[in-house]
Length: 218
View 1 (cartoon, rainbow, N blue to C red):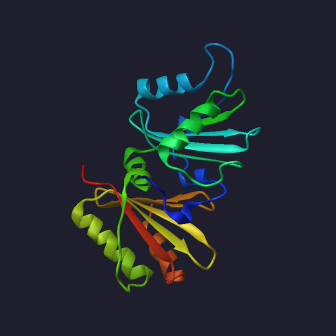
View 2 (view 1 turned 135 degrees about the horizontal axis):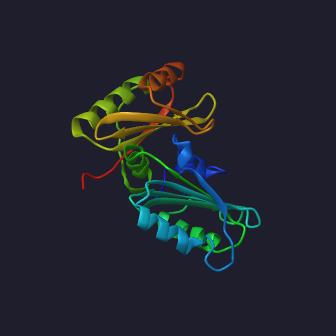
View 3 (view 1 turned 180 degrees about the horizontal axis):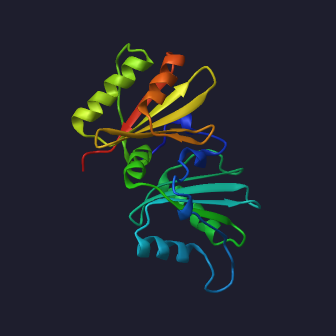
């Protein structure tokens, strides 16, 4: 069964999906209960009709819930859902059921935005990838260089998860077909395009914990 890494049980797990870098693609609205207004059927029709690639986030104040769907060419490739009743991150299928239930409730706030395909696929490794096992004694810099070079040699699409013990912050480094395509700092919601940023982060915190998850070749 799909399961996000244990470290990803955040109060707002939906923050793990990067914000858009194309502000013009953002669409925001509240779900209405009137006929022909925005609801989950309209959202899915829009996804399939537009072949959208990006993210759909939803929040319902009365249920104290948040959700995020990662979509690639109109297909949902990952979903997170959390609420006061269900605080822990659950698999995509279960999260989708809860998300669709929220999207049928009036006044659920929805935000849709586009993401580049390479970044979307790299993020999808968090949901559909396999964890890379490690049995080494490398420090953070050495292991990051090692695993990145291995992904490069394999032309892998993957996500490298870096947790810094000094401040418990998390950074996600994205790899698409072996090439670095960005890094996302979860706590401050900042997206970086320079791999040197990751190296500097690891030099500052050499005891950082690194996990990696990669998409299967197929």
